[in-house]
Image (cartoon, rainbow, N blue to C red; front, side, top):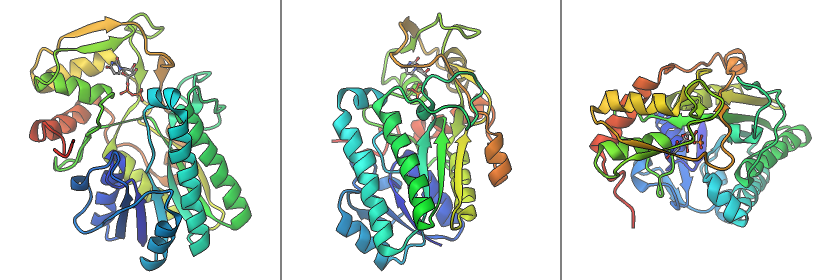
Length: 329
Ligand code: UDP
């Protein structure tokens, strides 16, 4: 297939693009490089552009004879979405609607969309099934939920096919260590811990150790980025007119912040000092996927089910690329 990968120079998008290429698809990356990295995109496949540039998008969809879109491009800092919601609604909602309109104008009707467990907000119970109510507690989660609804409406009205894949905590890096996670600013737990091991940071701060979990620290479902990539390709293969897939992508296994830190200590051999602060606003104590729908619908399940090999793959990338892609200003 000819696939347009928006945000394909970003963390999850670049891993999906790599897999698409390996599986023989013809792919093009569309990325404005605000958070993406030139070095993360396969050579000669990057088209620099913004989602809000309808004409450019429509031109690319037409010229490259695109059959389907994988849409990763979005802003994804929860905290920033609270302080600057306009930026999130503009990029994640208006930008995606611009993409969807460009698809409509050019007759492209298949899309795999990066959604998030943040659309569930504070879940009634864990593990989380797709049937649980979606009540996001921050603008980032809302922007993703708005698009899930828009995709459902377009699909019913215009005969599209879509998959909304609700990621839990993306982690790890490509097995060959040539692409990985590089955010600026970095806010995610595993890269922050690994920066301590690299001597770039003195310590890691645990956000809350008196939460209602076995060791008092937050529990998350860390899913390897290559497992996310595999799920995207499986979903792409299922898209027909009228397909609606809304699927959690996680391992079904929760890992606490302390367990993540311990795994990083074992993998890196660094003591990794940690202190404790209060919980981060809006952080639910536990978010774990029930991934059984993805198994049923796609025959997909995560290969990485333990935190240690996920950390090992991340460490391989960070050790080899202590400055990430080395393109920060
Ligand atoms: N966390 C932490 N210290 C940090 C960063 C994150 O204790 O410096 C915790 C955070 O509260 C959450 C988990 O680690 O429970 C994963 O956070 P991350 O920001 O990586 O992903 P999120 O779950 O927010 O999407």
